[in-house]
Image 1 (cartoon, rainbow, N blue to C red):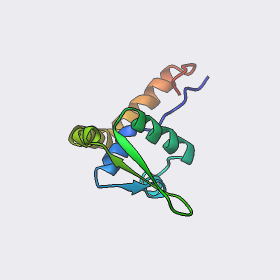
Image 2: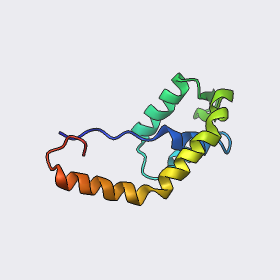
Image 3: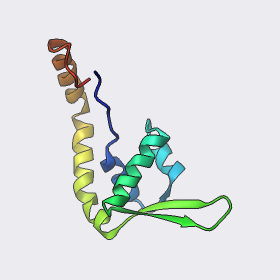
Image 4: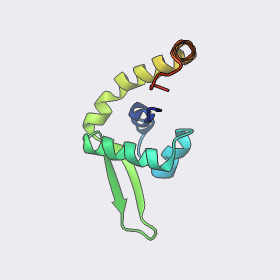
Length: 109
């Protein structure tokens, strides 16, 4: 059995720290995220009160996403975590590969 991987909402927060973005702008900035995963991620962040989704009455409808005051207060912490994970990405990948070789039947893959 394979565990589902979720997208890191911290990356969305970091991207929105630069200002409001439309959905497609977020998707282009977050290489590799599917439309479905981005939709779920922004919904969760909205539910948690970290971003606000604004729909403008245009045809077609325009929607943008921006951080709330609470979300903006997180950006320096989240940016530090993203920077750390980027810096250690290779080591983490190597550790996972080593673990997976030693535990071929694990459910974490």
